[in-house]
Length: 264
Image 1: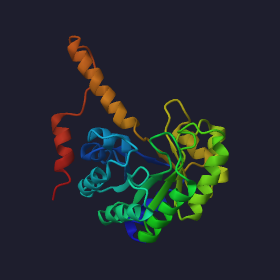
Image 2: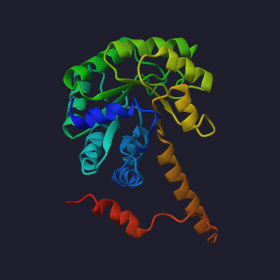
Image 3: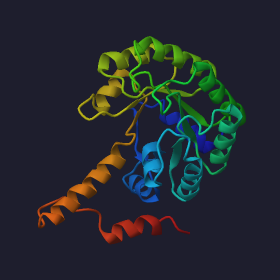
């Protein structure tokens, strides 16, 4: 296994959970790296919305590749959220994974949720996972199941069954967003023999509490993108209202420096 992929795998077996901030463009990723994060993921919602495209609609293959190409200038381990692989053909998903890996990407997310609120057949997602691992064995494949995210009935047994099928297909980790509480997360950790990834929920368990439950990775998902958009709107509203106080944003020079620092 190449060193960068091995390093990313190792972060899922550390003494504390990997906190993975999710970026949507070069500046956001560079800012997270500047704050000391050695690994960064992408947010499919942020990447799609920034390009004026819908999320979870297989519309951002080009944008994902373009962003990965830009981010390889950064000293960071990059994982890319490819939604459901941007295709229903496992071979096409494997081709995308191989293209991203050639750009230095060390991990991908593959999800089983559809934009229409249904779940892909378990066997289809498993086939995508297996195709990716056959094409790029070193890549960390984080298989995401949306049983809670999409509000399916009796989600825990479904999540566990899907996770086990994805693990048998070669997945390296399992991502279960929207698991509702510590007890459920503990049951997932106990029932899945792979590193468990959960989504940070404001007001939910802290990073330390998730670590105590056995969680291996905590993603921010679209939260940071939505928080940035919200802060921009709050600042704009304050200006329109006549000024007011608002948090001091990064300076022009600091933002300019994010790009300048990575250039040869």
